[in-house]
Image (cartoon, rainbow, N blue to C red; front, top):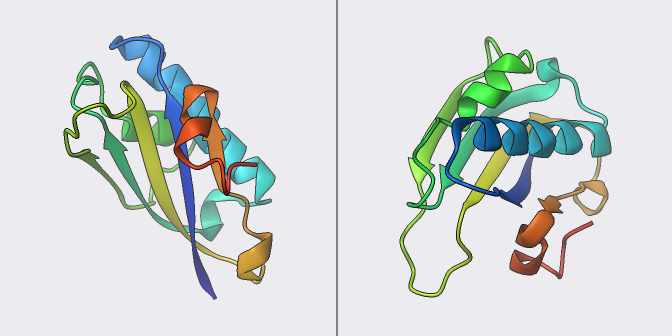
Length: 119
């Protein structure tokens, strides 16, 4: 069965190391909370707000071992008043877990984005 897992993290600054560190934290939490391995991951879409340009978020996943997983990065739309410096992800995974058992992960300031499903 294929499930989609959402997640987001607010990054401290538009700095390469800050982006890589934050995305590493986010991807690691998604994997741990949902008891996944890279073999379970079908693909991951990353988006970044327009104020994050110092590095591709997907590089952090590659460094975590996502070598043969299709990854793509895109820019989030620039909505006035939106939370700044946010990387979001949507991971498509193969899992037998029912939808209600999927844990979506919102970290740091990004918790405010989805208080209804953040865990």
